[in-house]
Amino acid sequence: MLNDKTNNNFFSTNKSLKFTSTSSLDTFNTKDDSSLNLSGRSSYNSGDSDVQLLNNSDPTTNAFSTESYNSTNGYGLINAAAAVAKAAGQNTFADVPDLGGNNWGADLIKAPEVWAHGYTGKGVVVAVLDTGVDYNHEDLKNNIWTNTKEIPGNGIDDDGNGYVDDVSGWNFADKNNNILDKNGHGTHVSGTIAGENNSYGVTGIAYDAKIMPVKVLNDSGSGSYSSISKGIHYAVDNGANVINLSLGGPSSNSTLESAIKYASSKGVIVVMAAGNDGDSSPGYPARYASKSGIAVGAVDSNNNLADFSNRSGTNKITYVTAPGVKVYSSVPNNQYATYSGTSMATPHVAGVVALMLSANHNLTDAQVRQIIAETAENSTQTTNSSLNLSNASSLVNQAIANTAGNSTQITNPSLNLSNVSSLARQVISDNNLLRIYGQTANNLTSQTISSFNNYDVSSLLSQGMSNDKVLGIHAETVKYLTSETIASSSNSDFNSPTDRTNTETAKYLIPAEGNNGLAIDESDVFSARRYANDGLRLRFSDRKFS
Image (cartoon, rainbow, N blue to C red; front, side):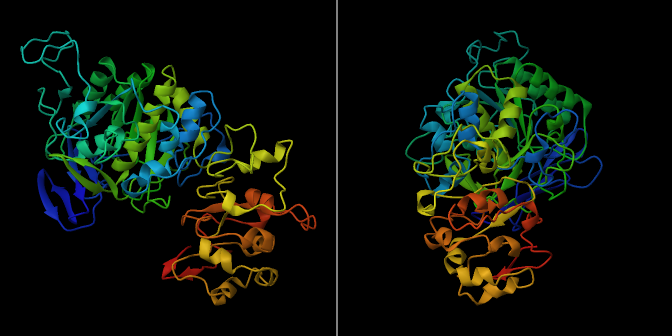
């Protein structure tokens, strides 16, 4: 796999494993239908027979609204607080302070908000189909699933499931009960899902869930479709509620597809990595998320889609994003490491699904998929019946456009952005985004706004903006921002390079008085998805947005 702390990366040539000093990106690929190899990048080879971490789609099988899905990041960043709240039949959970440090992934998807309500994954079993798990690891040993029907070491298949002494899982790669991970990938994935909530190491997204180790890849990262398919059946038949597949490839396989359908029919949710080639659509098995399971792309700590992450594609599937760049987690021998890849994003989503099931154990695969899609970043839906700005700690992931139909409009002329901890990850419309960064906002004035036009994008360059901050904004939209909404903004108000408002949000930030009847519509911001203004670029600190 990869360890960017040492800048070493594993890659495979045929079936040999070597080290190279390339950038850390986890990868699996298969050379033929029977072999799955671990590569130095979290991506897939282009050969017809290669297999890795992927997903697909069928526009006729998803009932989710088209407004909330796009071909780049699908339904957007997963929102644990909204998803678990909806699963439990409650309003979206209120924000809590970020944990910070190596817990940025949990913070980004709002897992601490869920923990604050007592949902920690307890009673949920997550099968990790991977290179095995270091079940002796200090952060995992107390969260390893045990087959209570099996008597350890007696050489008898006590439970009659066809596997002798499968006390803590099964090794389908070597056809025995040794599920110990000597590679690191499976242990890293497991830590993200269910690392114990103690005073050290990593805290998993569902830290009270149990990990069922199912080894479908050998110590070199090689495996087969057959092993993966058998592993899925084993996990389902032995009590798993969620299956994590941080592996995949570009080729479809009917046996594997049937196994995923089997899991879905039994109420088991399969979460699959989208792949790391930077392709316009995912690979397999994640493409099967058109009908079953969930596909996952990777974002960094600023919620920017990783360049290596496969996109969601034009054919709509259940695709969301999660932290997958420089993710800190457990590796064998009580160690910890930072890996990158869609393999690292996938367990974040598997953890959220475990949290959902701990809140409502009766959810079906279809219900989980729908809730995940409806509550993710790009969704226009909200689980809150109203929005109270006086108590709001965040507008994150709230569908502001929907509030237009509420009895109370957001027209407070003294709206203070310091009352709102962040506008990060706010998405109302797929194609109409307005991005503002903290230091640049401080330099916007009524004078610079009034003279701003379609051909004057570069005029902001002279406003003394911080070198490490970027402003991406459409000229026709800027003039509707007022000094009242700008004056109190600060870095804490716009705390991330992914902070976004858009046309629907912006009009609520305009005081009711002094608005002069102006309103912003979709024509004011054309397609800012790539942070472009009619093809023009803003460039600061050598960063291009196009």
